[in-house]
Amino acid sequence: PPLSRVLNTLEMEKIATKILSHKAWAFFASAADDRVTHEENIRAFSRFFFNPRVLRPVSTCDPSTSILGFRSTIPVFVCATGKVKQGHPEGELNITRGCGRTGIIQMVSSSASLTYAEIVEGRISESQPLFFQLYVLKGERAPDRVREAERLGYKAIFLTVDTPVRGNRELDLRAPFVLADQEREAERLARKANPDAPMDPEIDYEKGIGEPVARLVGADDDMSWEKTIPWLRSITKLPIILKGIQCVEDAVLAAEAGVDGILISNHGGRQLEYSMPSIEVLYRLRKEQPDVFSRLEVYMDGGVRRGTDVLKALCLGAKAVGMGRPFLYAQSAYGDAGVERLVRILETEIILGMRLLGATKVDELVPEMVERVDWQPL
Ligand code: FNR
Image (cartoon, rainbow, N blue to C red; front, side, top):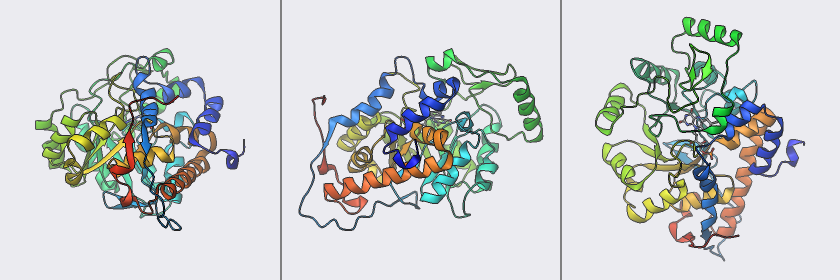
């Protein structure tokens, strides 16, 4: 269907599902075990209801915000997803261009299908900020990666902390990546020319096959609060955000460790099955440790599909929310135009929701406006 007829993120997903290769679909859609955490990430939003305020002037409404000091037209950023080219030949660049045109920020994956420099070059202007997601690999490659990201002008390091080992993703297991001979050869040459080229820890480049079981090739599975955060701080001046905080206690430890932000996330339900849905963790954090929100920026991702989802997270104290799969599907089906359309759809939904809620700026979204109910709607 023509892009102008696509009305929401769920339709975008349905359309993409029809055109994606089986492997690309399996990779994007995959989640751990029985997909409970992934599906509950989405469904859990339906336990949060609004208490809208009326008789407030809402003729003008500004949904923009700042994330680590960088302006964003809506309180949404694109989360890191590896191997975006699986869905469309332009891959990450579709997202870069779509974000540039609409004024939102892209977090680039450590396992990108283009080099980090190519993505920087693909921006629509030099002032377009990009964030960098870091998987720490054992050995010397992690410092090199961080320094390269900093040199290339990335504005923040999102250190992924929920992936010491890879989750059990059975869709992926049934459809592993198998690199064709020419792809392996191209990889080998690219790596020889540029040892810093993105290396996907999910692929065993020697054997040319995706690693289907619970092991990330070369990932550092010995990271710790004591060692890893001071180490990262010592090699970069960029803001450090921990991606993959899944409980209140770790959010408090993060604040004590002095990082600049946390992204409450369970990796889109791809890591530990039955990890708590992200919006529930955010809700608990707001209730039990409200101080944390003034010590660092709090974001969440996982299951955000509607403007109202974004607003619920903001009411509960999130500075912004991340989205993964919806952007993968949008770029797969329609390239950069799909990404642009997705942002416009979200913007429309967010503005509509804010006006009906009685808020004209994001800082008017407060905890009293949202309530958790103990019944699950039909
Ligand atoms: C991811 N995610 C992810 N996270 C990360 O830190 N590095 C990565 O390379 C990837 N790769 C990746 C690939 C795919 C196909 C998916 C779906 C997800 C997790 C991602 O950043 C984010 O946490 C989730 O996607 C958020 O959930 P939703 O929005 O997809 O429900």
